[in-house]
Image (cartoon, rainbow, N blue to C red):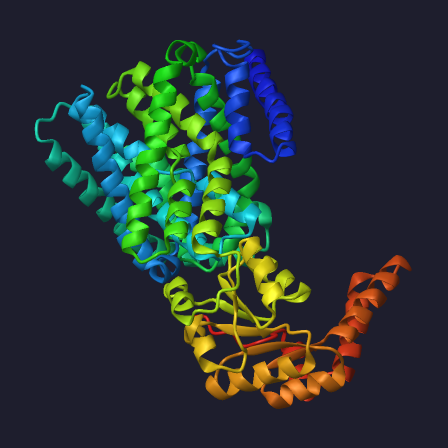
Length: 577
């Protein structure tokens, strides 16, 4: 390795560690940290790193892994579950926003090709920042959170035809609508072909590799698939990143997708961070100084345009006014794919470099203020929709949950119920919570949890939160009788619904199982097992021995039904479909 290349990598890593640590301390997105780090060390900043082939290759590989990771998360099952918002709402948001921005750009004198690229790139929002904001606020499972995720998925899908379209624009063509239609068809055909090939060959390949029980070989195979697909699409005139995206779609349809995701996550996070640093390095700070007024004006116009479009679409979808405004503000920024698309267009000479620079800075600014926009949106929603209060109108509850599917219903939102909800949210599992205590509901909704007030023995309440579409019910109520009533009601209304219940002790567990619980857990007993496990570990017992001792105690204390679940390794037979 040449000394200057090693120096480039060392400076990049040092800047990443220092700046991102500061941004994390300030509770800001690491993406912004990488962008700022790139600006600081780049040619227009401290000039610690000049433009080089090394940074170019790092940027390309970062984009490849980003597209692979996006494809990996787009399973057909996930798309099917969210099809209403992805295909309908998400597509309308992208196409309408793209049309409005394209028309505006042409009105200000840009050519058709440039205007279309600007419209397509700015129609996309930031997946990384929006999901981070939702996760920090625990709002992934709320109506606004589910809608935002669906729109982001739709936007990710539209990246494919946009990346196919830009190289075609680099050629001399007269019929632009025909080029766009051809790009869409070409992308659609490629996706179908890749998924078919993946289903035929990837499962057998991963099965063989998995049988060898080598994580290194598994990771190497994954990288081979990613780079092989990237090479293949480039060979046929498409971009490297598109091949990686298709590879992600292929792997997502196999049962090995979670292991693949775990193996590539360290590479993805680091290389993607370095990619954003190279984007920051490419930003000319002189452009920001000389065009500050124009950049700020464009940023405000972009936020207003996207916020208004999303808000109107939400209102047409019968969202409440406050929730509509909240969603609009949350999705109003530019996104990381704008960097990819503008970079590709600038490299191919389709868009002027000064235009690209101006828009890159604009997108960065809109991304930076997203957390503030999210806070503003939540305050507006709380004030207009009174969501911080107790929701009791069944019609409103039905409307907020009409799209939720394959979710978990949590009954009881005390300390235990809230912890369960936080765990589900962290695991990206949709859930809805019910509680008959108005104080618990109020506190939960203030903090963004999808919790509703209602008596837990009424079938209308259960139907309002889509229990017929749920995969399981978890009863965490502190009150013994209320927990038993909830289990009895769910079992009588929905005989096949898996029910996991929290019991205080073994007598309570027996009552809950007699009432219809699929599996009840004795809280006091499990706490004693955790304490015992900790002390045995401190005394030097091996983990397998501790597990054996704990398992023996559980088998002795729990009922035959619970013992069967424990020995089979399953806590509840939750359906997969």
